[in-house]
Length: 365
Image (cartoon, rainbow, N blue to C red; front, top):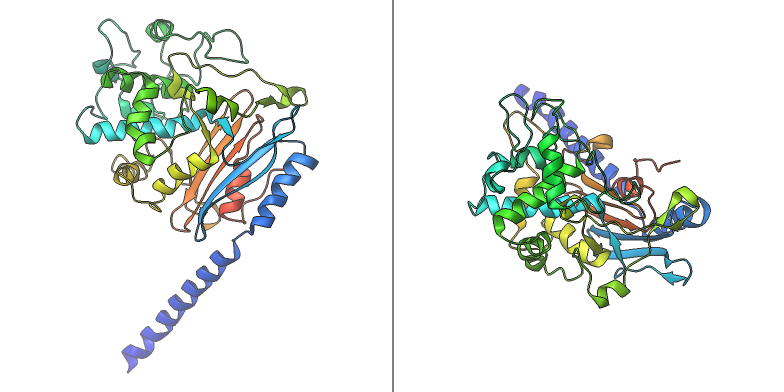
């Protein structure tokens, strides 16, 4: 009896804590009306957006909430089928393609990338450590955020950055840090990874992503180049630097893996649901591997970087930004919530996404 009396309070305490956790979790839910009010506030009052489309995956299933305009002049409203530039979220697609190729023994994640590039291409390295596929995907390559010699201007930093110019830049670049020694986000690294995988697959980047990711997931509105029908659905991008003037479209030339994809909320919901195991697809296992630490003793993940554990969350997220667009995709599998937000203005929307997943996260002021 004494043994039982000692254990019972502990069990009751655990049950109480579990109940409290469930109640706390339930309290973080937002209604669709609350979400719509946030979008209206951001567009009408704060003037930090033109059009916003939110795709949500939770216990209710998948749905879209939208507000604002795809084009200010035409007053055309945004909806779940409106297309946007998704910027660096493109790297999530690149990562899935990479892991798919690794699972099929077409590449090895710890192999130096020069193995898969044409002879004569010089890749910078620090001392004896060479850049691998996993270094590019985890942003530990030591490469800079953007090319040191941008194309036609800062409004479109990758314009004209052809494959030959990219190789020329890499061949002359002097590394500042040891490869693998630190996390330094690199859009250039994302672009190079897409180039390496495309070279290995013997195709262009768009075909690589179509074959490895979008077609298996049934995504029909996610691509680099837009046909006439998709172009009609494209939102106009706006720069916040001059009170929402039309921004130039970004052209990533041969480095589409840095951010060349366009997509819609309805299409991105398929990608989000697959990452959350809410739908059964051929890529569920591949995506799951990207959500686990790549190396023993190192919590850094390929593609996603790491979990956001604030406010007892466990969120994986990626933000994208180009000259006239911003985007965010995030999910908390433990909470069963995921969100994708697409905007045709270059102002971050990550705070909205985190708020939808867990209301303890504050909105930007």
